[in-house]
Image (cartoon, rainbow, N blue to C red):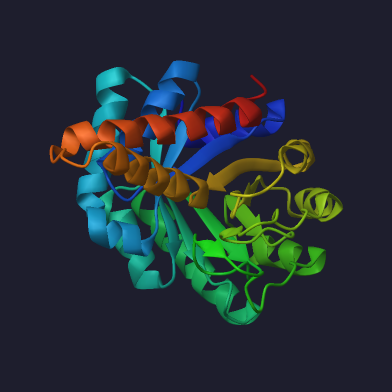
Length: 283
C-alpha cells in the first residue's frame, strides 16, 4: 500500500485533494470509511485535542489501523490541531500517521520555534510521519457561527515562505479566507485563490485547507487547482449528525436501541462525505 506521503504527492500532481474528516465517535468513522470505500479513494480521519480526549488517542489509532489492515485500504489518521509540543509528542508516540502543530495564535517567531521542535521530534521517532504547520488565525471551533470569528487574519506570502523554510514542515496550512465553522443563514467568505497560488509557489510544499465546511464548490475546485492537496471538513459532519439524530428520535420516540438509532446517523454522514470526496477527487 502507498504511504500517506506518496498519496499526498500524487494528489498534488493530479490536481485533486484528499478529504480529511474529523470524528468524535465510531458512527462518524463508519460513515466516512463507508463513503471512501464506495468511491475507492484515500481518506484521512482527524481528531482534535478535544476529540482525542473523548475517543482516546490509542483507541482511535487502533480503530483506523484495524480498518486499514483488514480491508487493505488507504485510510490514515491525523492528530488535528495540537496546540502544544507535549500534545503533538503524545500523538507521535501513540502512532498517528500525521500530526499538526497549531501555533496560529502565537507570534510567528514562537510558532516557528515550536513547529521546528515538533518536526525534529516527529521525524526522529518516525521518518515517515507527515508533519504540518499552521500560520494565520481562522477561528477555533467547528461550530455554527453568527459572524466571522474575531481576529481572523490572512497569511502573507512572505511569512508563509519564511515559516516553511525555517521549520521544515511537510505540509502547510495558511489562512486564505477560510474559517472554522459555518455561518448561519449565509455562505462562508470566499477564498483568496490568488493567495493560495502564490503561497504554493513560494513555499514549495502541498497546502492544506482547514475550515472547509461552508466553502462553495467553485472555490474548492479553484483552490485544488491552485495548490490545495488536503481539505478538512468537520462542521458539516457535526450538523448532519445532529439533524439525523433529532429526526430519527422525533419519528421513533420509543426506540432506545443505540445501534438502531445511529444507523441513520452513519448514513447521513456517509452522504455528506460522498459528496465532498466526489468533488475533491473530480469523480
